Image (cartoon, rainbow, N blue to C red; front, side):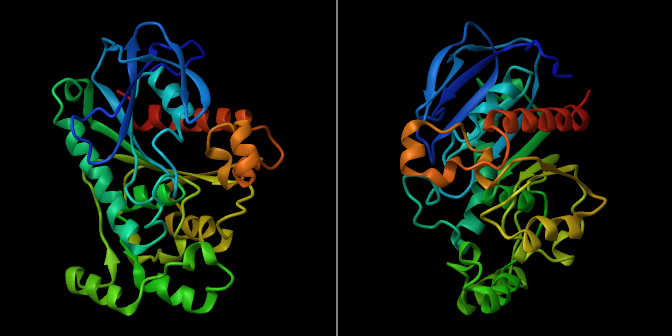
Length: 320
């Protein structure tokens, strides 16, 4: 079982763009041997053992991360490094059309459908790599996501996202919830989904995933009791104490209502929606101050709480 004590068991190995021809950029952190040296992820300083050899002691559990809307593959490097040092492999693809360089499809039905497919495709590619796959315990794969990524991993767990409910919600709440309703699907979209799936839903279950962690998940407006029938893998949902982006009643509270008894819910004190992003650089603070807003605790303290919650959950569900 991975070591979750204060003293890390391994170095944090790191590789970026691991495929010869990327369908999308993907970063990999893993238990390694070798000295960690300074590195910067989007301007934030850290330390990793770049391109180091995998440590002995595997195969190791895998955590695959889906970043939030308009994010990037390094958003959760602070968590990925922590897990790698404790015996987990962490893979983070960068979603096409919904990242910091290209956000042309952000918060649209296109992304609702594409994101889970990309996570599954990333799994396919990683598990086909002869230099990586033998180190992965394919029976212990967790999907973790933040915001739109949280919705992504819930779909991978079996949630049938109801685009009809999304449309009905936004017919009434378009002006008061622009984050969710800016790109609400039209009737032609619902008809296309119904033609493909028998209902206006987005099914995306990946049976290889044995647990999920959803952090401040979005699109609770598309969640229904029927959509969560049969979702029975271990789930951890981490909520922001003060989510200034997603309306609580139709996101965190909605998921709590539907998953009561099937998922563990934890509300992180002092956290806002963006508190799960990296520490802010001076550039980010000056140009994107909303990304730096926390609510009563320092970001590193919030990150420490998340690290402990995630590591404890993973060790419990993937023990052995």
